[in-house]
Amino acid sequence: MRRIRQRGVRAGDRKKVALADDLEALDAQQVRLVEARFFGGLSVEETAEYLDFSPTSVRRHWRRARAWLYSKLSPARN
Image (tube, rainbow, N blue to C red; front, side, top):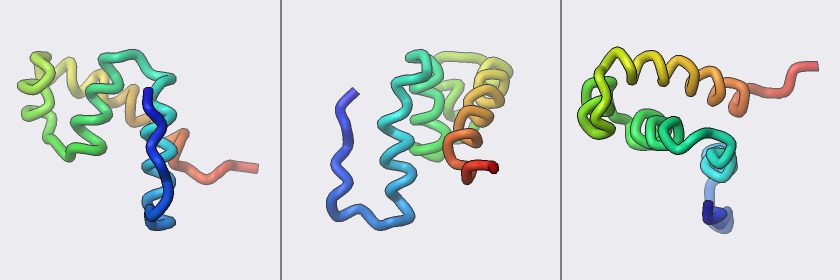
């Protein structure tokens, strides 16, 4: 995946830019889901239509992807 340049990116957005680079850790299906839901802001129903999944499948995959996102976006625990 192409690395996104961080020059000119606000400090609050740097974490999202780094997250976009980390998407390589997910499988292609999860990447498309994260792009649609997290970056694109699509609803479950819109994502299901976009990915040609059932809304139930989107919810199931989204739970797993959200856990991954949480682990990436949460501050490190000591």
